[in-house]
Amino acid sequence: TNTNTRTTLRAEGFSCPSCVTKIEKSVGAMAGVSHVKVHFASARIEVAETVSADDLIAAIAKVGYTARASAF
Image (cartoon, rainbow, N blue to C red; front, side, top):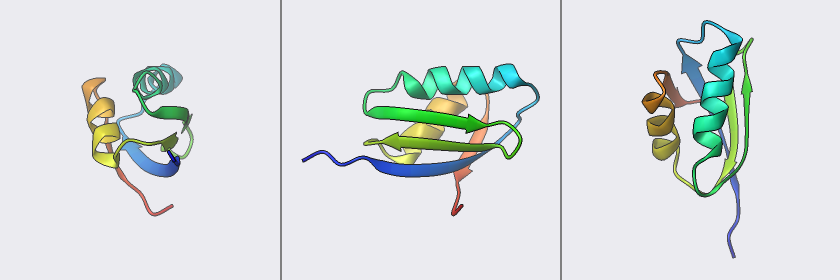
């Protein structure tokens, strides 16, 4: 069975709401990602996925933002 995990990341470098769209498109296009929600005010990125946090962080880095795993 393929179970989704939920990963919460913190992002740095958000300056505008269009940053949210860029990140959601980039992460959402990844194979294995079923849901992504970027919270602009708190700089949190919530992802339901079957890929590793490292892969998510790399995808976010590709569009120009720094993200790291978050405990909350």
